[in-house]
Length: 192
View 1 (cartoon, rainbow, N blue to C red):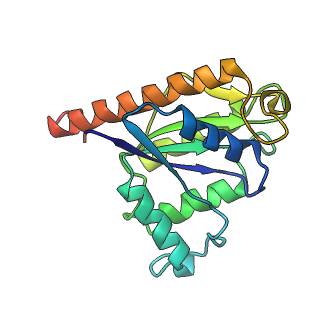
View 2 (view 1 turned 90 degrees about the vertical axis):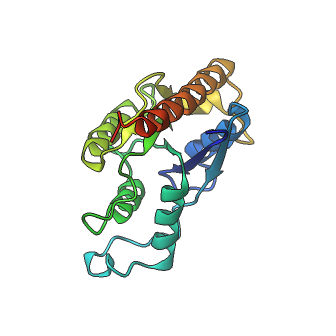
View 3 (view 1 turned 180 degrees about the vertical axis):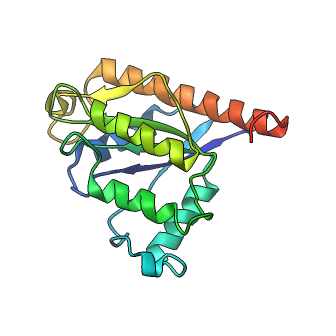
């Protein structure tokens, strides 16, 4: 695998979201053998089971992009000790109908920014629980929990905290290596 194609998205629709800013920073911090495409979740409508077999165009496009990606990078805020509804909605759409999940077998890394000191720890752990059912392969370390985010980003939304930038570099490098290892394992018949 020469270039690892990563699909990234933020669980926030806010234009000046710290998590969207973190994804933009990730694009600058990627290893040379990786590429990060950021997709906006705002066009995805609320999940409706009656439409799952003939989903809206935005959902079909999202699933296509997931399938085309080698790995996934999710930037999540934390709402009420968990993940935001917009993120759960997108995850649900891409996993349906049952038996047609776009997530299965995908390597995934999580990062998150919050104004709180825990920097999305609880939301990230909830996502890990969801990954079990989705049959995804989460990167365990390093964890990137940016908090308080107001101190890590400047007024223009640029990630200014060098320790966080270095941790993100390490996470992205580890995600690329994890993706390559899983791909090689599949080629050898060691990973389903």
